[in-house]
Amino acid sequence: MYVVDSHTGGMPTRVILDGGPDLGTGPLAERAAHLARDHKTFCSAVLSEPRGKPGMVAALLVPPLDPTCVTGVIYFDVGAVLGMCGHGTIGLGVTLARVGRIEPGRHRIETPAGVVTIDLHDPNTVTVINIESRLVKADVTISTPDLGEIIGDVAYGGNWFFIVDPSPIPVLPANIRALTDAAITLRTHANALEIGGERGEPIDHVIFQGNDPDPMVHSRNFVLCPDNTYDRSPCGTGSSARLACLSAKGQLEPGQEIRQNSIIGSGYDLSCEPGPNGGVIPRIRGRAHVMAEGRLIFEDTDPFKSGIPR
Image (cartoon, rainbow, N blue to C red; front, top):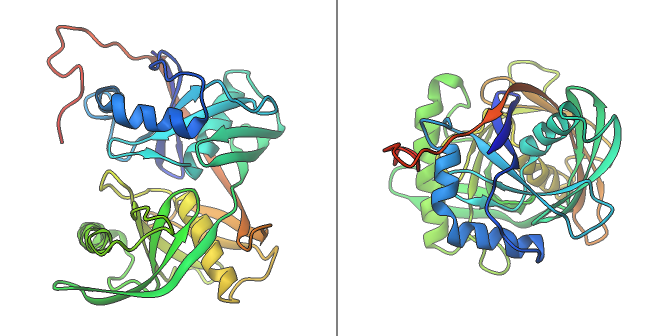
């Protein structure tokens, strides 16, 4: 299995260029469901230790249905198959350039959530023009024994988010463990209460927003991913959902650019324009760096061929 590893703001992406399972030729959403349903062992083998690392997201390249797209891609981590992945798309753009499949300019990529566009500015800098993102429900109250009453927004940016602003815990690196535990608790309660998308989609990510010490930075976030690790980047789909919330509440003008930092200090430059269906079309600019190229080997005699169970 030929892979290229990169990181976007510290968050790793593993692009699978060949060697993935046969998922058929249907719509990408159907192929993604096939991957989630029938290939859990494959996903674990690719991303779990000892081959993978905490937080890593895989980008499985597949043929697109849309002939205007340079590729189709299905993103997944060890916890779930994802509708979209912003940091992964930035890493994918840099990787495709590295292997000679695209040049600087604009390109379309098909995902299970829809077609996204990337602008490759240079070998390391990519702007993602994401699918239309939206605020689903504002100011939802969730009561938990440990956290008390927490008020947040349900929003969609390619994945499903519960966004809490301000965070009940300071968004500081020293608090990563506490933020992780709180976010897992909050997501568990949200899904038990069936708080999520309009069609019952469960919350898969939780975002805690806080202040950044740099006055030029709009905010700093902590993002819990489906695999219960935190996003080292500011989370592209989460930033998209956040833009939808700010816009819907009149706190962000069309085209206004803001800087969003992650819990470890890496950042995205963000802006949005009104979408055709009442949401926003986000723009996320970030940088990625290729770290490794190689082939993954899965020996039948390897006791951890399928990864180390978490």
